[in-house]
Image (cartoon, rainbow, N blue to C red; front, side, top):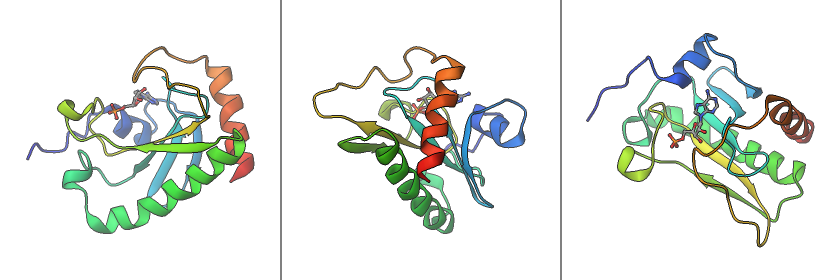
Length: 139
Ligand code: AMP
């Protein structure tokens, strides 16, 4: 199994070395807006403890992470009046993983509206902040 690389971009967000539009934080978990959203409200939930992905994660960390994913999924659904919520998590490049720190994607979905491509265009920061405000209000 490939070792965790602590120089990945989400580790830098956790260290405060690069900015993020934060939605939620507790002792073990951070949630923030995805900068290349596949739909409005696309957010990411990550554990503070480093693991490359789900395959090498500590089960005790997963046990704390999933309730936060659930909390954010409900908030994002409510904030965007969505019909459903897509929750995704990729392990290794073959499965679509591009950032090697475990993360769950949470994406509000509306009937008949397709998702934009994965890691497509960067969203305007003011749009991300406004969408984050809506989600925070629903938490
Ligand atoms: P994955 O393919 O599951 O590894 O997805 C990584 C996700 O991280 C993609 O949806 C990217 O848009 C997103 N992403 C990459 N860099 C950043 C960043 N600095 N802040 C927020 N999201 C990011």
